[in-house]
Length: 342
Image (cartoon, rainbow, N blue to C red; front, side):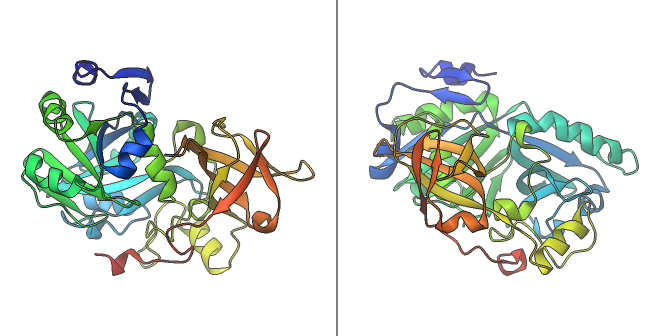
């Protein structure tokens, strides 16, 4: 499954981590353009005559918005409003939808959705035959257009040609996910690596952190309300659609202002990467939240995303014994209706 990566010198260092010998990947992304295999991402397909109606009752997105051009963020919740998964909803073809999410959630979500699929004319397929390649940097749009023969889409939109798809994600630099058949991934990666630096996927994760964006993994299921990950500020919730699992709790938290925890971006004074789930403490040693993602930036400093009590904004904080400085998010933490982006 990863021969196309190892053939180009990549080392799979974990189930969702790939490394290359390229020095200072974050700096390369800052100054130029990089390409990376996104081994932490995968896809789940939902197809059939009832695919749209089926998803409409399960997902926070208005399914009709996934129209082959706009590809909205979405999430799936428990009846208590806690996230089971979040990711991007894509229309690959008529009556054919695709969920892009963390690889560790593909099988659990196939099992979860399969419980309801029996009542609809739909089928679920884990797309292990697809590869994801990420492009970041100054020439990312041009490379995506030349090597994929597709016009680079706008953020949270898609461009599709047969089995090849390009998705634009937000970031400090242009970012694109190229989704294609795994059998074609090596040749594309080879062509891209001749024109930019090939790096590990920790560089993509850093870009996610800097964009204030997090796709949960299997260890984080049933832990957060969507608003705790600022999902409504990222247009990941349609408050204008009908019912879906968990909708009542999610809507009540929004309209009554009951969200007491939020996603924050921060920098640590140190070089030790805290593991996901690490406590964020105040000056008195009281837990104020937890780190959910971390990466080293271009200056070898640790950047993190953390879910914190909103009252902690003015507090002195630390994680793993390192002082924690809150940074600005690149979006407003307020409701952004996806209807405005279609």
